[in-house]
Amino acid sequence: MIVDKVANVYCIDTMINNEKDAVCCYIINSEKACIVDCGSTSTANEILNAIDELGISRDDVRYIAVTHIHLDHGGGAGRLLRYFKNAKVLVHPKGFKHLINPLKLWNAAKSLLGDIAEIYQAPEPCEESKILAVKDMQTIDLGDCKLMALHTPGHAVHHVSFYLSKHKTLFTGDSAGMQYNGMIVPTTPPPFDFNGSLKSLEKMMELNPKIIAFTHFGFGKSELLKKVYKKIVEWVDIAKEVVSKGGDAMDLQNKILELDSEFRELLNLYKNSRIVKESYMLGFLGLIEYVKGG
Ligand SMILES: [Zn+2]
Image (tube, rainbow, N blue to C red; front, side, top):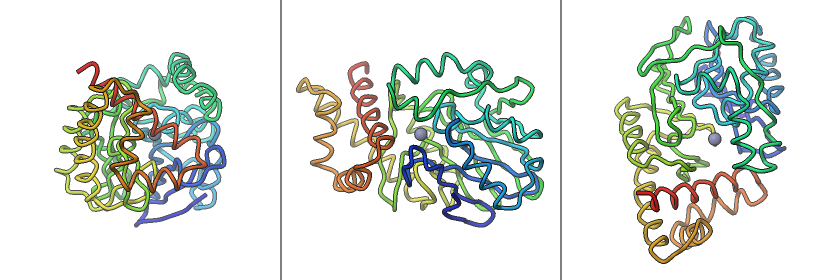
């Protein structure tokens, strides 16, 4: 479902598990159309419908840019390639082999997420010739505009953000947290790389973007980069305190509920969303593990 638009960029709610505002994708309606993050296998039809609704020929979809290979961002690429015959998948070099053979990724997702993995469904393999591993700062020509890939490890080692310079729009995947209405929560699942994450945020701030396109969820203001940076630092400090008292991820969630009114509000807003609540919990687990290991 198309839910928002800025310039030639459309925001599509994937309606994963029938949940609104949980996972979105973007369609850049440029000469060479590009999808940024593509949801999971289970939501591929939402993208197809949006492409059709926008009047974009399926043959004109030239790129599927996945910020990283987690199932909610890149899981649907293999399924979508069946319909977009001229499309290539853009991915971090470290994600390349997992797109060709997604079995290891699928097994890892099942052991981490349990039955939530089934909501996403298993990723389908991508043909090797249809995948393009993007270098840091590599520019992709979309005809009337350009998309730049920016390696942004932290949330995952294989994370890439994409920058549409013409409209100063930055697609952050999970590298700048999850936002809703200007309220933000860091996305820090295990194995979380604290220093990498902050460095990536600095790198993105240097671009001076005007609009941030979050996969969770929707367009936001550029100030959110600074805000999430600060919050990651604060939350790691809180995690240190919780760990020093022998606490676990649930204790950390409770502590942050007490200290962070935005998180309180977001948790309440998403109280019926299994997908979002699970992401928050994994984030707390990642912070606890980082602090214990660091
Ligand atoms: Zn995600």
